Amino acid sequence: MKAFWVEGLYLNKLGVKKARKTGTYQQSYVEPFAEVVWANNREEALQFAAEKLEGGEWLEDPKVTLKTEEQRMRSMGAPELPLFSGGKKKKRE
Image 1: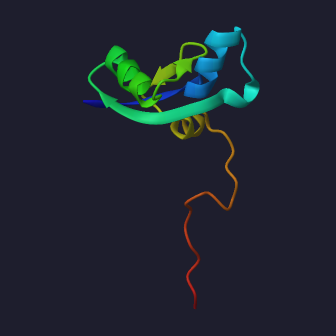
Image 2: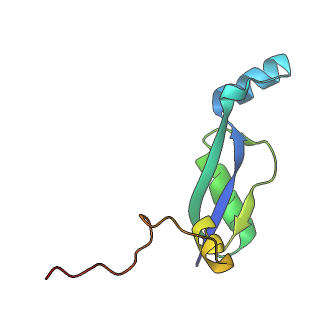
C-alpha cells in the first residue's frame, strides 16, 4: 500500500441537503479536505477519501498525489522560515 495525499473542497452533509432542496448552497458549507489515505492505487484512494466525507460531496475533483504539499515545496527549493527549519542547534559553551 502507498500513502496518497488527497486534497480538495467539499460540500458538507448539511450543505448537500440544502443544495438539493433549494438548488444553491452557502459558502459556509464548503470545507477543505486534506488527508493522507493509504491505498493500493489512485482510484481506491479517492474511494476511501469519499467515505471520510460522511455524506458530503466533492465540489470538484480532488487532487491526489504521492507527495505532500510540504515535500513538493521543499523539492522546488522554496524558502523556509528560520523558525521552522529543522536546522542545526547551537551548542552551549
